[in-house]
Image (tube, rainbow, N blue to C red; front, side, top):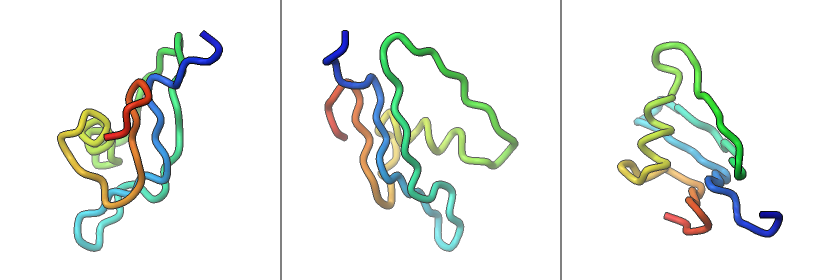
Length: 71
Protein backbone atom coordinates (compact mmCIF):
# COMPACT_ATOMS: atom_id res chain seq x y z
CA UNK A 1 0.00 0.00 0.00
CA UNK A 2 2.34 2.74 -1.20
CA UNK A 3 -0.10 5.64 -0.68
CA UNK A 4 -1.50 4.48 2.66
CA UNK A 5 -0.85 6.75 5.62
CA UNK A 6 1.44 5.41 8.34
CA UNK A 7 -0.26 3.25 10.96
CA UNK A 8 1.20 5.55 13.64
CA UNK A 9 2.86 8.93 13.07
CA UNK A 10 4.27 10.93 15.97
CA UNK A 11 5.50 14.46 15.25
CA UNK A 12 7.19 16.84 17.68
CA UNK A 13 5.91 14.96 20.73
CA UNK A 14 6.69 16.57 24.07
CA UNK A 15 5.60 15.04 27.38
CA UNK A 16 6.40 16.81 30.65
CA UNK A 17 5.45 16.37 34.27
CA UNK A 18 6.36 19.64 35.96
CA UNK A 19 10.08 20.18 35.39
CA UNK A 20 10.59 16.53 34.38
CA UNK A 21 10.83 16.19 30.57
CA UNK A 22 9.98 12.66 29.41
CA UNK A 23 9.91 13.19 25.61
CA UNK A 24 11.41 16.21 23.88
CA UNK A 25 10.31 16.67 20.23
CA UNK A 26 10.04 12.95 19.44
CA UNK A 27 9.37 12.08 15.77
CA UNK A 28 8.72 8.64 14.26
CA UNK A 29 6.30 6.72 12.12
CA UNK A 30 5.33 3.08 11.76
CA UNK A 31 4.30 1.91 8.30
CA UNK A 32 2.50 -1.23 7.18
CA UNK A 33 3.72 -4.04 7.58
CA UNK A 34 6.31 -3.01 10.20
CA UNK A 35 6.37 -4.60 13.61
CA UNK A 36 8.35 -2.81 16.30
CA UNK A 37 9.39 -3.37 19.88
CA UNK A 38 9.80 -0.67 22.50
CA UNK A 39 12.60 -1.23 24.98
CA UNK A 40 14.23 0.93 27.62
CA UNK A 41 15.09 1.12 31.25
CA UNK A 42 12.71 1.77 34.09
CA UNK A 43 11.44 5.35 33.99
CA UNK A 44 12.56 6.00 30.40
CA UNK A 45 9.05 6.90 29.15
CA UNK A 46 7.78 3.71 27.46
CA UNK A 47 4.41 3.69 29.23
CA UNK A 48 3.99 7.45 28.82
CA UNK A 49 4.53 7.05 25.08
CA UNK A 50 2.00 4.21 24.84
CA UNK A 51 -0.58 6.13 26.90
CA UNK A 52 -0.11 9.14 24.62
CA UNK A 53 -0.48 7.08 21.43
CA UNK A 54 -3.72 5.43 22.56
CA UNK A 55 -5.15 8.76 23.76
CA UNK A 56 -5.16 8.21 27.52
CA UNK A 57 -2.80 11.14 28.03
CA UNK A 58 -2.59 14.49 26.26
CA UNK A 59 0.93 15.50 25.21
CA UNK A 60 2.38 18.84 26.25
CA UNK A 61 3.06 19.50 22.55
CA UNK A 62 3.13 17.66 19.23
CA UNK A 63 0.73 15.39 17.39
CA UNK A 64 -0.09 11.70 17.23
CA UNK A 65 -1.96 10.28 14.26
CA UNK A 66 -3.24 6.71 14.17
CA UNK A 67 -4.23 5.48 10.69
CA UNK A 68 -4.22 9.08 9.49
CA UNK A 69 -6.51 10.44 12.22
CA UNK A 70 -4.82 12.95 14.51
CA UNK A 71 -5.85 12.76 18.14
